[in-house]
Image 1 (tube, rainbow, N blue to C red):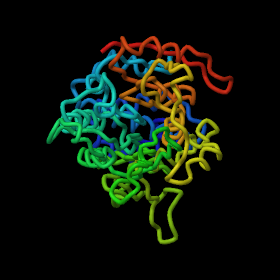
Image 2: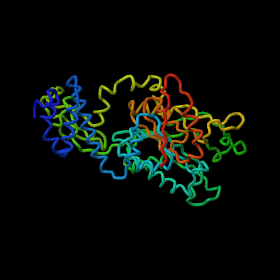
Image 3: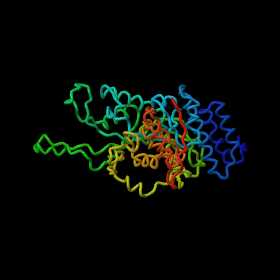
Image 4: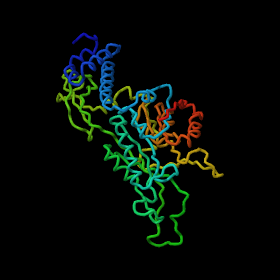
Length: 411
């Protein structure tokens, strides 16, 4: 088993072979050896990283192969690096069902609000939430493991249509609370609720000058939720130690529900404690603590960190109506750059895929592409918004950003 590669790959394989044979079948094991033999590492660290990457790719492919409904051509389109922005026209649930499992590294969106636009109408709030639940359930499969969903939604004042359709049936509907419960029930972990302070609003109805008495004064809504969720699918597959690269590890504990950690049991590992305890790690720390991720491409600028250092943050919504009452953006619900910029910089690395399943004016995919990621958006209303979206994407970006190059796909 030794001297197969004449480098640190030999030590990794020699120490790990019995574990590899438990995790991989003969074909997968042969594929691993073949891929390693084609590599030319310059150092022990290179060997460890290369082995880790190839091994994890094989494990991911095993998991992805369990889902039988993905479309090869569609996923090839998503992976194609000739473009950094993917425009998908159609129903987002249909699009999600075609995607490979755990193939998206970040999801960020603002959903169609219940009965807020002519093109997003439901008979009652329960039907709306049922549709959203289906999409969130499918998104759990598609989002990569130990990754993040950033979900912007506002509580609204409307008629849920569950008791009466009378105008008197209008009430405050706590969409933030409803969505949090749905996400948790579908397997996600609630992490945070950032409050977007939208500033001064135009409506004056809270003044209610004619009734300056108790029970008549209510504030108007000038905030929205930016909900942060983690996906932690419990994966008991043995993963390599990031310090020696071997699979001679034991299960340790779950650092968060669903996030399995491991402890290296290789006595020749260069990182052992004074009490001879091995390196403790998880699949998540393997990629977040990887040296190659700590590059200038992934550096978060201090201005963004300072901007989002509190969980209440103030910035203005998109101004779409000019002084003549004209919609200058061609879309009724444009998304501000601030939210996807925060999400992309805080939760992804350069080259990763960012999906907005309710892309609307395609702000999130555009921002992701400008920041060196692959921006993917799904929009149902092609006829209504295609012209405005393409005009937005065709517009020249500043010198500091990459030019938008997009491809289209019809579901």
